[in-house]
Length: 268
Image 1 (tube, rainbow, N blue to C red):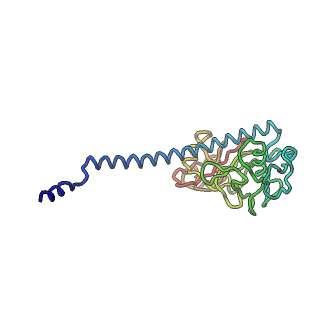
Image 2: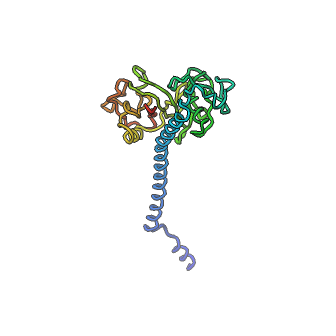
């Protein structure tokens, strides 16, 4: 009987103090996970601007050394040799020339000769101004198809960079009206097109835009890639914006998920 009593006395539940300690530990673990996730995301977003500045610096260094735009360089083969075929992937430094007109132009179709948007990264890498080994041509059989084989990838999973001269855009069903000049697009792959697919949230896009530009999606040096998406809205903040809303459009901060791709304009 004494042994039974002792066994019974040893059986007891958690005290309030013990439960409190357990809950505190769980809270610390959950809080640590959330803080860690937020820190990782913040670092990813900062990397967008860091990469952009890195590429801008590389372009200016290239211009200083070669007196030409990468991709547009008319005498690139003089420095790095002539690729055997300018319509297929270049696996060595041997490359193709641009047309030397001062613009970074898109070609049409797979392996198009003179697709300067892809020669752009090839020439920068050949000059050892950026890391990587790029093919200098479109990927596969799709127009403008982009992969990390012909353009750089970013820190955010699935993200890609793209260089192009847009000039002045008006009446395009996708882009806000305005003067874009030459710059970069940053997003995830879009079939048959540059990386236009959204890569960050509208609130994140607004924060970046407000930090470095005017905080508006349709004007300034940082704009959204596509005008008629969940990323932006008319001035009322509700209705979907159109290309002609470039001066009044706002970020649709109520949108959830990744709804924005970025376009850095008038860099060169």
